[in-house]
Structure formats: structure tokens, C-alpha cells
Image (cartoon, rainbow, N blue to C red):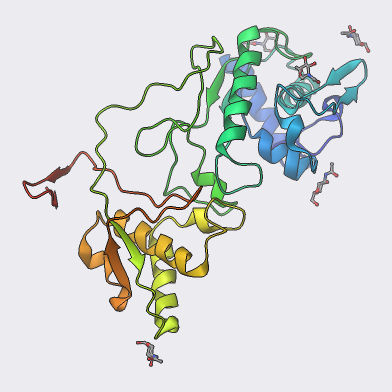
Length: 308
Ligand SMILES: *[C@@H]1O[C@H](CO)[C@@H](O)[C@H](O)[C@H]1NC(C)=O
Ligand SMILES: *[C@@H]1O[C@H](CO)[C@@H](O)[C@H](O)[C@H]1NC(C)=O
Ligand SMILES: *[C@@H]1O[C@H](CO)[C@@H](O)[C@H](O)[C@H]1NC(C)=O
Ligand SMILES: *[C@@H]1O[C@H](CO)[C@@H](O)[C@H](O)[C@H]1NC(C)=O
Ligand SMILES: CC(=O)N[C@H]1CO[C@H](CO)[C@@H](O)[C@@H]1O
């Protein structure tokens, strides 16, 4: 999507000046080889940070905001159609009115961004899949559209320079449970997709801060170290664990680190400030994860995990 310069309406859309030449070369190549134009689009981001709407409703296909973007004789009531047609206009202006557009990535994150949550993700996909199933297409591209959902599961090592949400696009949790209802068969049924099979969680053991405040400088050093290595994105501003107390945030980080190292007790030391507990320290929306077994890990008869 960011190959376009900002336009108020789709018919004003065109490729950015600084990359126009390579874009035109690419289009020519696609045309000659019969390839599709593959569009990666993130409505949550476009509505909030490109259009700067404070109301996120326009991002949903089942919008009820009443917001409309009028473009000549065409009215857009949701950003999905507006984004597709913006790209379609730019391609049309380059001389390829019939080039096929495929949505290579579209989705809704569940953490780490304003409006990124499970409820909105479920609603977004419900509306999107209904729109896709209708095969009505957009004003400029009527008919069926192929889409690829982004993505099947969260990616806890993904680069997140542009925000914590980059690690939370998954329809599934890492433990194989679907986060929300979505009907991949496009029948708009109200059901959870199949749970992933064969996933085994490690024992219910968490590592937390023991609340010894005798040397907070050292505690902080350990906190930083843990977050440098493990995934602390749920602690970032606006994310699911942002509201935890400072001490609980330290616990979250210690646990993330401990789980990353497969619950090896060596990794819950933190200069003596870590403590292993068997009661779940999770609160409300802030879940302290338990690691899952990788296929190369085998529990021995005592339940201990050995790397083989
Ligand atoms: C390539 O572009 C030309 C001119 O727009 C068009 O006639 C032709 O059908 C296109 N080829 C493909 C494979 O789409
Ligand atoms: C939204 O804000 C960004 C950054 O401030 C700005 O570049 C962009 O032009 C704005 N868009 C609109 C539609 O005003
Ligand atoms: C919109 O207007 C254009 C000309 O400006 C016309 O070609 C097109 O058929 C119109 N579309 C609809 C849906 O009326
Ligand atoms: C805290 O730990 C650091 C690093 O080990 C040490 O240099 C410092 O003296 C300790 N501070 C206190 C108050 O014990
Ligand atoms: C209430 C409302 O505006 N609904 C619109 C949402 O978007 C769809 C698809 O563009 C329109 O058909 C609805 O009218």
C-alpha cells in the first residue's frame, strides 16, 4: 500500500514520485508475464495513521459509522474497498486497467496497537470474509477477489520497529488455540476454527520477581536483559499488559525469558530476584505464557525437558 502517495479519494491515487519509475517497470513485467499485482494492506493502520480518522469504524466492512468517502459518482463506506480501488486507479493510470489484483496480506492484530484486540479482529474478519464471499468486488474491480490472510499465528521473533503489533497478527495463539471465531469456508458460520493438533504445553510453572526491593538497580538490569532476549511486546504502551504494576511488569519479563529457555531453572535466577511459582500470575487480559514443546524436545520420565 505504501507505494502510493497519499490521495484524498481513490481516483486521485498514483504511485509515489520517488519510486514511480521502478513501479512502472514492474507493472510492465507483470503485464508481460501475466503476473498479478499483489497488494499487502493493513486497514487498521491505514484508517488511523494514513487517513488519521479517530473513529476506527471505517476500517470494518460491516461499518456502521455512517462515514463515507465520495469519489465522483462512487461512494466508499469502508476502507477495504477504498484501498483496493486506490491501487487499481494507480495501475489504471499506468495503462493496465485489467491487471489482476490479489490481496497478498490482510488482517487485524490483537495486541500492541490502538484498537488491536480479539473482539475487533473477529469482527473485521467476519465482515471481510462476507465481502469476499459476496464476490461483488469493488466499484473499480467488480467480481471475485483472492485474498491471503495475515497471519495464521503470532510471530514472537518478528522485527517490531514499527510497533509491538507486528508480532500479534495471528488468528491462532502459539499454543494452537484459535483466538477468535472465523469461518474459513466463507459460510459466515459463528464458529472457532479447528484447534491445532499435537501441541503440548510445558508444565504450569512461571518465573516471577520475588519482590525483594533491596537493589532495584540490579533488578532493572535483569528486567532489561530479559526483554532484550524474550518477547516483551505485550508490555508496550497500549498493549495488553501495559496496565500492570511495575513489579508485575518485571515478573512478566522474567517469565517470558524463563519460558523462552524452556523453563530451565537456571534462567529464573536473575541475580537472586527470580522465583518459580505454580499459580498462574496472569491477570485479566494480561496472560503470562507457558512455553510449548518444540518437536525436538522430549520430556523424560520426571517431566523434565531435555534437548535432544
Ligand atoms: C498487457 O497490457 C496490454 C495493454 O494494456 C493488454 O492488452 C494485455 O492484455 C495485457 N496482458 C496481460 C497478460 O494482461
Ligand atoms: C495524517 O497525518 C500524517 C502525519 O501527521 C500526514 O502525513 C498525513 O498527510 C495526514 N493525512 C491526512 C489525510 O490528513
Ligand atoms: C460514473 O461516472 C463515470 C463517468 O464519470 C461513468 O463512466 C461510470 O459509468 C459511472 N458509474 C456509475 C456506477 O454510475
Ligand atoms: C546493586 O548491585 C550492583 C551490581 O551488582 C552493585 O554494584 C551495587 O553496589 C548494589 N547496590 C546496593 C545498594 O546493594
Ligand atoms: C451502515 C453502512 O454504511 N453499511 C455499509 C458498509 O459497507 C458496505 C459495503 O461497502 C455497504 O454496502 C453498506 O451500506
